[in-house]
Image 1 (tube, one colour):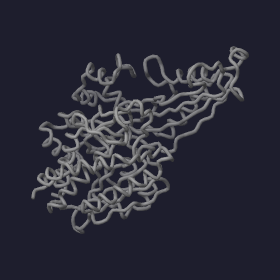
Image 2 (image 1 turned 45 degrees about the horizontal axis):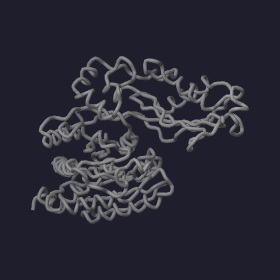
Image 3 (image 1 turned 180 degrees about the vertical axis):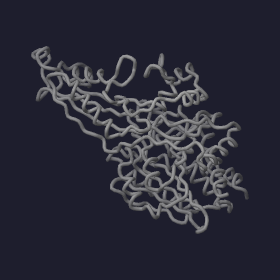
Image 4 (image 1 turned 90 degrees about the vertical axis):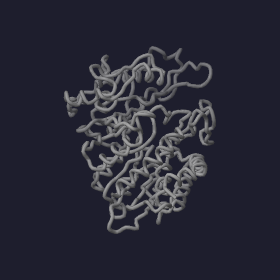
Length: 453
C-alpha cells in the first residue's frame, strides 16, 4: 500500500483521533486545567507510540510537561526535529461560541474547537503523515518530535529543558509546525518571526474605593490616569511615542519594500473579514510592512472599577493594564521593556502610584536566509501541493522558541504549517479546515520523504 492510500483508508479514524485530542482542554494559562494539560500530554505520547515511533515519553519541566517522540532507527542518516505545542488558549466567553469549545463539531468542512488551528491540527497532521510513512516503509530518515505544553504562555520552561537535553535533541534540521499558509490557494514560506516582550502595570490611587459624590474632582481617578497614560504611548500618526523605541530598527530597504509588494493584499476583503471600517497604523508603511517589518506596541487589556450590572458611583482605588511589543531584528527585548517602563514613569499622571511587573519570557526577532537548504525543500513541496510558488515573508506574530532552538541546537528552524489567518485562533469559534488537515498530512509526508534524499 502506498502512503497516500494509507491516509485515504484511515481518513475517518484519523478525524476521530483529532476530535479526541481537541476534546482535552489543555489550557496552559489556567492552573485549574493543569491536570488536563497533563492528560493531553499522556494522550499525545500514546498516540505517537501507536503511530510507530520507537520512543514517546512525557518528560517533566519546571512547568507543564514536554512530549518527546523519537523514530531513529538509522545511525547513518540525517535527523529532523519537529517542533509544536499541545497547549491551547483559554476559551472564555462560552456564550460567544456557536458550540462548546471542547466538544469538537464539524460544520461545512470545518472542525470547530479551541486549539483546532493553533495548533493541535498541525501536530496531528505531522503525526499522521509520519504514521503513514512508517506503516508503508517510506520513512527513510530519523524523526524526533518535541511538543511542548507552554507555548501559549511564552514557553517559560522550554529553554532550560532544551539546554538539559541537548544531546537527546541533537538533529540535522528543524521544522516548526506552528505556522500557516496565506490562503487556501496561495502557499506561504515564512523566513522568520517578530520578537516579543511585555509588561503589566497597576495605577494605585486611594486606599479603597471612594464615593464619587463626596470625592469626585478632589482625588485622582486611577481610570482617568490610566486613559491618559495609555494615550501617551502612541503619536497621532500611529507610531510608538516611547523615546528610543526605534533606535535599533533598520529602515526597510528599497529592495525589501519592493519584495513586500509581491505579497497579495485585498484591503476591502480583509476589512470585511476583520469587521473594521478602515486600517490604522504607523504612517508611511503598507499593511504587510507594518505587520511583519515594523515593531509595534499594543495594549492587550485594561480594566478597573465597577463592571457588574447596573451602576456603582465610585472612584476605584486601582486600574490595571497589560502591554506587549512586537519586535524586529536588532531590537533587544530587555531594552525595550526598560524604555517602556521609563516612559510610564515619566508620563505618570499626578495623584497615583505606578507598579510594574515584567513578563519573563521575552524573545528577540528571528530571521533566516532565503537560500537555506531546508527552506528550499519546503519551497519545492509547497509548490507541488498548491501548483504555484509560495509567497515568502515573515510572521507578524512571535514564536519565541525559534531563536532558542537556533541558539541551543545550532540550526535555523524552517516554518511549515497549514493554518490560515481567518481561522479565529485565540478567538471564539476557532476552527481548522478539513481540507487543510488533509493537505497538511500530504505536505508533511512529502517533506519528510524529500528531506531523506
